[in-house]
Length: 113
Image (cartoon, rainbow, N blue to C red; front, side, top):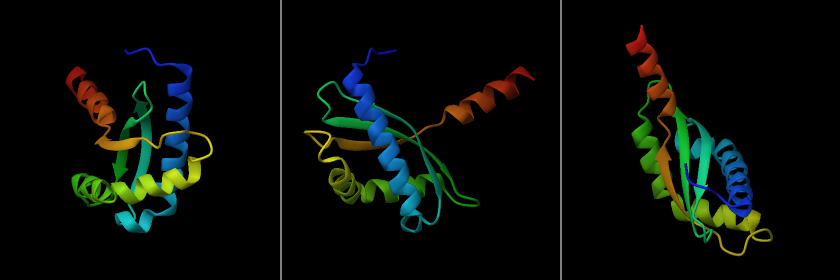
């Protein structure tokens, strides 16, 4: 586990909150998928953020939703920038990943049974 500064943690939590609200508000852009921001890891210089998402869409493909999010990345960054411009100096670049930790836990439980 990497050591994070207090500033990295604060900016990560801020981004997590604002991104979660954005995905909730703009669910129609992403086929009404339920998108949860599980964690945000931010670089020491605060210019790059890895955003881990849990995506739930009944009968849909999460990879398609992730591709749509990646395609909308500049618009997402712009929208977040407008919201947090007074709190941070640099609006970080986002990289989106699917958080598969719940799938991993389920797989381990199945193997233990």
